[in-house]
Length: 351
Image (cartoon, rainbow, N blue to C red; front, top):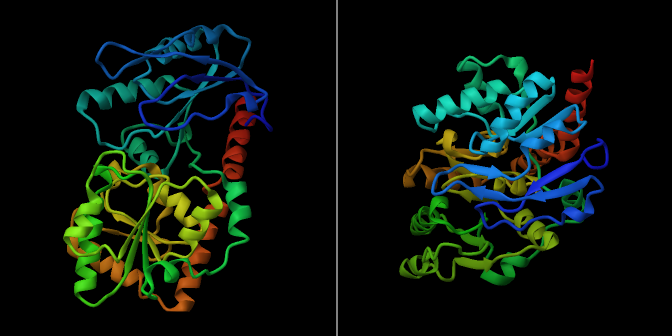
């Protein structure tokens, strides 16, 4: 956006999640960091100075697509008489909120000229709720694609897991923060079940424990210390690429999000649960039988069965799955596709 569109950027100063902020100074269009002020103990946020930006000489605005930002409501209402185009970039609606929350979402999104959605699941739901298809634009999501592509092109099979585990068993991998909502306890139980049934495999867990979930003790309780490698956090993309590329399947038993994009970028299929309304929109990159699979939520038997299926692929099928994963990322879930969609939208709105 900074390179190909004449954008000015205004960023909030913080979010609730422990996510590292980017260096805004690298953007030539960076203008200001505004304060995100939480309104008492409610879930609402006021962004200082945002509403007055509607009086700037901009024709197009992209705002965070959440009804929880009260300043955005003022912004949207003022945009109508001023004839300004406002687009909400949003996860959108998926039916996982209260009746009041759903009504709030509907009103908010109807005030926008267009809604940029991360996925088709929300788009389908919103059309069923009465939104016009032409108002909803699927823009998907992405990671650091160009850098990751350079890493991917240099990867090859390595002995990293054989050297660590001292065996050639298939590798299950989890990457992300270790949190209760990710349900890693279910993955540990599935690992035990598979090994007890002589379907031997190892597990690698990449990421920090941010909730004191005691997962290492669970692995110890099941006598799986030699089958689980708690790798810890890594922010080295070359290192992460090597770990994912050499794994057989990536598993997130709980909520799935950008992990799906990260894993498929390096050719590794993804397994998660079938509670689609509560996943991040990136779950759509997982196509059953093509780039991964879904198991019945919280069902240990079904999870174990799905894992067994994906760790026993013959070499030809595994290569095809890798190619499918690359294609999904290279054609859809990358910033080049996103900027193309955005440029077409802005151009169309100018006509």
